[in-house]
Length: 451
Image (cartoon, rainbow, N blue to C red; front, top):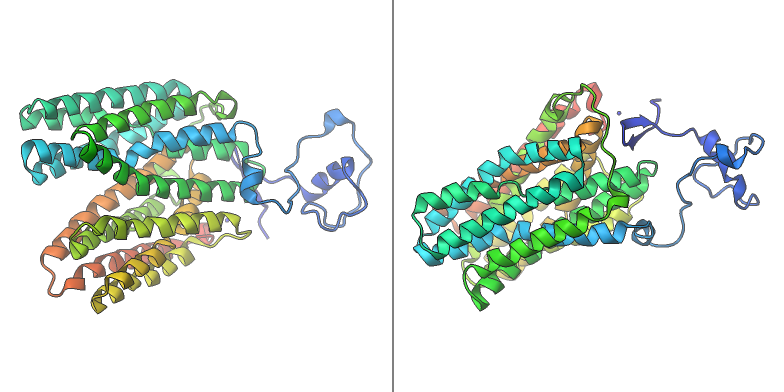
């Protein structure tokens, strides 16, 4: 943030264990070679303590993959599988709603307005749901929240099937806003389990970002497949089943659930120093994603638009997994600078009029997404008060969604009023530059030099 070394604990950022204290705990293992151990700096050791005085220490690094070491911990595979299933509907509900409403009412404008209403209501409800999760625990809140969202989606599908008046769609879509933030809850579990191992926590956050990208790659494809192969409401019904089933599987893993933190007068995460500027950066970053999606769809304008656009998420997924293996993390400002540069590649490819070049440009540009999001979410974890961790991460997601909506509107306007075909691709570049400028301005303060 020479400062004491900090680590993330259930009670928030705390002083990391002293190296000399950790070194004497390695006496239980082979003493013949201490030079390659991360906690032994060549200091003298105190006499052996009794076993009851020893506390667990992070496992020694090994040649195994960091992901293998990550999932060697009991219970991690199970809650990760549940989180993946429960997160997949996040990429399905929007596409499913647009398809079923447009097919029933013949209006994409109505479909877009209904989904936008759901997003707006969700941006208000989601932080409140996350606050309840922090206050009462994941299992006690996420299951009923998912059940309410499940019922709301069923009512919406029924209204569409029966061709109910348009106003009923706006009313019922508000009932779906309790969709729990499974990604935020999964990151909170990793933060609890790996509170004494910052390197492993970085790997876990990178993996979760890759899972997010995978869900947003597969979700729309699965939704479109169900709607086209079966019936227009099939995508919504399938997403409902995945949401409830995944949430139940996720919350059933009680051994990895973080304990409810004692309530302290910490206030809203928005009041945490540095949180508001960071959310502004997330807002501008979301505009990059929203505008890139719309301008790419408008530029390609055909059946290849979806697969071409999916390459951006594929690049981000691959970069997330690679970033998780890195032993060092980049600063947020560095990640945003790389994103600003790489977002120019689709612009150059579109200006050349080459669809294969555009596909390659999106693949490479997407590789800046995961490192940026992993680093940003890591900052959110450090800035958020300990008893509001889920709320803080949900606020970050809400800022992203608001940015995506803003970017979509800006990209759509640019596509409709483009003086030349590639004009719309200027919007993602501009949004990335704004995010970089906001981050740089925040980084000027002494308290946020680590940005």
